[in-house]
Amino acid sequence: MNNEKVKLDLEKIIFIGRTYEEYLSMFALSENALKNKRILDCPAGACSFTAVGRQRGLDISAADIAYCHSADQLKNKGMKDFNHAMENIDKARENYVWTYFSGVENLREHRMRALEESVKDMNRAKENYIPVTLPELPFKDQEFDIVLSAHFLFMYADRMSEDFHLAAIEEMIRVSKEEVRIFPTVDLEGKRYENMDRLIAYLTEEGYMTREEDVPYEFQSSANRMLIIKKTV
Image (cartoon, rainbow, N blue to C red):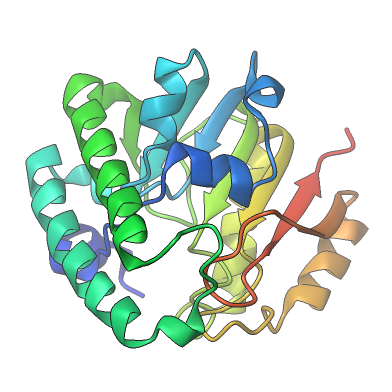
């Protein structure tokens, strides 16, 4: 993958996000558990977790390859991606679990709210939205207490190598003080990441406490588990 090319070509970036409430459910977290923590959301995309969380007094930073573009460019791209995604979801409703969302229109409301809140916050506090190109992160060792990573690693296992996954996860571990949480643990077809057992074995050998855990969130069928990597030292 030519990361510099991807960074410069906005058309190759998918800019869709989830709401603050979805994040708490996806990662089985409470607002109280995040107080007095420094949190990194990576890659954050058009998610409103940072925007809403900071309004509620949480210390959250967002990182994504897309943030090298302006908020206005990202809003336009987000609208385009959002409309395309909604068309596909509407055609394949049977591939999704309609419990968190009451239907397509309710899903549309959530996705639009996430996009609008995130872009508004980018214009207001651009310094909280840091451009990054995984697998490298421009942060100090243990700069954050918790790193959250949603809908990127594992989901695109057919497009990114095992080495890329490992390098990105090792970087997230490096910049975290306490733990890394990755959601979900399946690919776009709903199959568990094929190298998961090998990854967990490696991380365990490196001294990390690693486990897969069910969460109270499922939209894509079978995507209801996260990987937790805890640092023991």
